[in-house]
Amino acid sequence: MTFCYNISMPLTILTSARTDGSMKSTNPDEQSQIDQNRKIFLEKNGVSPNDTTLVRLDYETNDYCRYICVDDTEKGDGIVSESTILSDALIVANPNHALLLPLADCIGAIIYDRNANILMLAHLGRHNLEQFGGTKCIEYLVNQFDIKPDQLTVWLSPAAGKSTYPLFAFNNRGLHEVAIEQLIAAGIDADKITISPIDSSTDDKYYSHSNFLHGKQNDDGRFAVIAYLN
Image 1 (cartoon, rainbow, N blue to C red):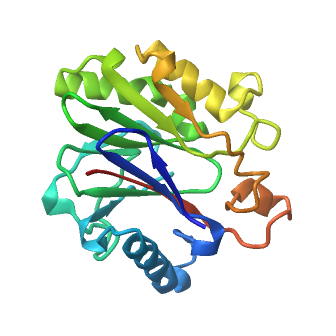
Image 2 (cartoon, rainbow, N blue to C red):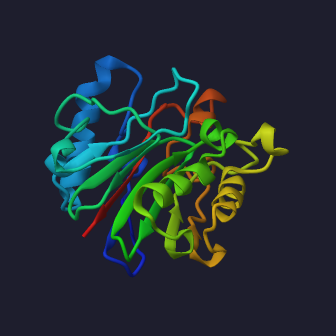
Image 3 (cartoon, rainbow, N blue to C red):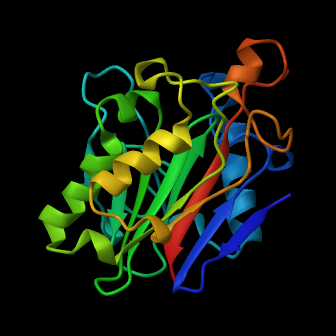
């Protein structure tokens, strides 16, 4: 089952589901199947794998607020060719350049500026939020592109709710709650933030790493968020 979100903008957002297969694995023996799952999902939604770049995270670091602008020369990176980019968010300013972010519990934040036609796809999980990544990713856009935060529109993907994934550093509040607070602190208007109502830890259409660790889900996969400018 695939979900496509129409937010009345020249922007397309897609999310895969468990029926589409896992979009990431920590087992190298499964990489061929992961590559195939990504390709099939993209192509059935009219997106070329050759025009898609993977948002690949790195937890062997002390910095979870790394943001990189990519252009057409990085198309296909991590999708049809070896992944060479490590970041917590990628930014594109050209149409038909899709970004793909695998998720299991955390938030995929799609941040869009209509006037500058700039798109960021950011990972907002515990590590990022503890370093105030929700605020820093907006500050990066403001500094790099001289845009105004109150002109930005944000969409937050399905994520695990606080009953399954409480953030201990934030008084056990949930991912969405903390992310929204940090985005607003960066100058985003609250009415320009759209939150998916789906709790990925209670909706079995989605993968949840927390559920896997607690024996509630047999497969430790990842669904994906894909976003691109039309």
